[in-house]
Amino acid sequence: MKTRTILMTAVILGFCMSAYCQDAPKQGDVKPSTELKKNGPVARFDKTEYEFSDLIQNAPGTATFTLTNDGNEPLLISSATASCGCTNLSYSKDPVLPGKSTSISATYNAAAPGNFFKSVTVRTNASDQPVILQIKGKVIPKS
Image (cartoon, rainbow, N blue to C red; front, side):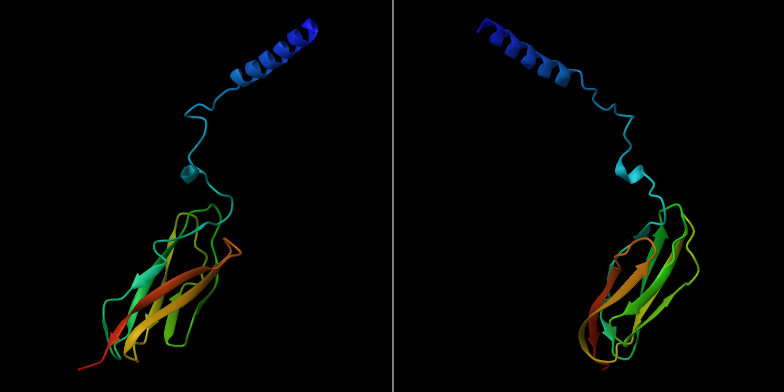
């Protein structure tokens, strides 16, 4: 019985000592996730939604989205497609070098009065998942 008590005490002390001896990371040892560089391209948009003020019917409106490459390899836009033919897209097919930016412009034709909500699907070599950009607003009839 006495041996069992001594053995249990030794085991408990062992656990306590191993927990106490663990080194906590020092403040300078771990970089915040915003400072870590990912290998490959990293796509970062300045915004993913653009809201127009009222557009006059038949006066197109253009939304511009800025895409920055925060990675360490060139970023390629493989495709950008609008949800309907009423939105025209313009973007560069050239690679975006690390630290550089490019823009994607979406021009809505504003032919029909009323509220609108359109999306632009952008695919890059930074991710298998596309980025969805949104434009919305209201077209008011020409007086």
